[in-house]
Length: 209
Image 1 (cartoon, helix red, strand yellow):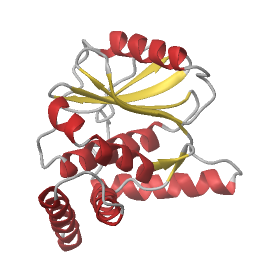
Image 2 (cartoon, rainbow, N blue to C red):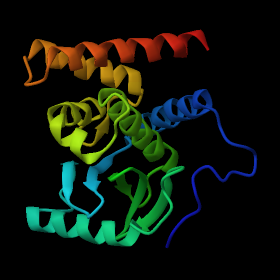
Image 3 (cartoon, rainbow, N blue to C red):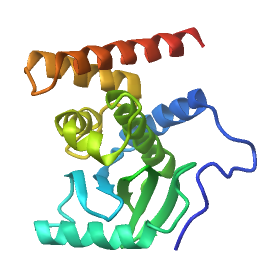
């Protein structure tokens, strides 16, 4: 069953500030109630359904073949949808999937059936925007593969063991660039410097709004 687009709200489209405030409030409620928002996986696939970068945080898929089968089936279900202008939501194999496409890359975030959709969309948007910052706006498969180490670090900054750590794209990109410097990742100095400068610029703009 496909759900309505996330932006189609009768009371108007929420601002970024509104979404962040709601996210923090809902996460706090989860902690108070003894539970915590949990991400099942984050997937970055190409336009043919092949892996670019994936992270699983659940035992729902015990083998690599099970994971690959899930990715292929999910890609087949969503590839003809219009998820390029805004994120979309779908139910798939007892999971909630939020996804968004750009160029030849397909971004997915998976949560449990009862997980809050707003939280999943915020994680997706954080990942999507952080990748855009780190790839300097050239969000396509070739560039992603050339900077795969950055994208994997990006995933580590967003979620750890299924628990959400960060959703702000500027903060994520800044941390990834810093890790790359300290760990001497195989990345040109120019790319690292540019990623840091871009992250700082976006952060400065957000503070001035």
